[in-house]
Image (cartoon, rainbow, N blue to C red):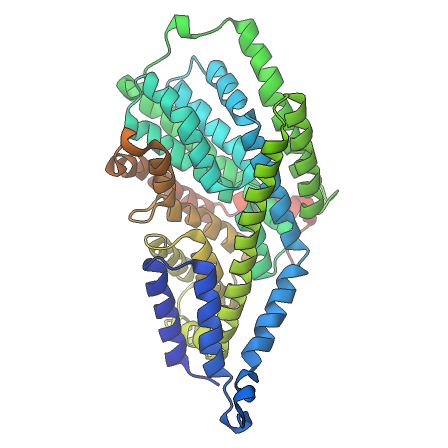
Length: 455
């Protein structure tokens, strides 16, 4: 049945329930079933009490669950998660940060630069924003605080660097986006390489310039804190090089078409285990922890998919997608105006919501309009991916700030963290504008690797 008023009410109620703190996956699932029962209800077929369960929504729920379980693209998620958790628990990141901190000693804000590079590299091995921010909060923040770094400055570095995992491949978010938009994960990964490292580069430039202008924010290390060059080179050789080679092999096999994301993720997971064993930090306890956390996160993602697909199917069946599309098209917007409107809406949604709700519920509303406005879906995906960085950096939600506050507790106030992340929010918006002006930043590499995009 077409009942757009009920669809809009359904969407509004979902936002309210999420803001009240209800679990996202099960809220989507419950609302999809409840409103779906109403949408597919047929009073003529209800004769006995047993027939109350004779409703198409239960068949739809069953089919969506089966579709998630057989989706080959999603197989990469648990493997990449396992790779990231092994790297985290094997103290490989600690070794990486220590070596980069020594190597960058002559740069203004050297420790902050090392933290950002570590976040970028760890992000490519993990894609788990919460894990990156939490670990770097425990690892880098105390070191920067001991070196008399400004607390707001240090917290902003960790929060911004920790969010790079949802953009830099192999991003879990891009795998989810590929499944939702029915796009090639290979092209999405290729499209994200330049924007991801460009954003990380701008973060580093900002830190260096800011520390150069105001050295009190990030004092230079004293001579006695700097080890001999031979020790620095050895640390780089034994920590930075192996992990970087592993990541390059994983990404290279994907972008070179030698392996699917799932196959490359399996190779990365095995490589992480071998690397941890070489460092003599692999224990049965750490393997169990990694498997448990991987299973927990994977289950959350799978239920998010089941719930979101059920919710979206019912929302569309009730006419929700159609009424919103007709409303936007009625403005007779130019393509650039449509892009600005879509990104402003996504940016504003980042204030109260996380990236998962925005991606799963709201992005599919815009996807059918891309052909109408002649927008390349991979370019739109990169704008969205950059924009979703803001969902972690925009108060009042700003989940990266809460992750950091959760591990630092009384060491810093939440308002100090918010103040520290504001400049990085401006950098993200600047990168979006820059990518719009030079769309080749997102489209050049996938076109080179896989040929021009054909709708």
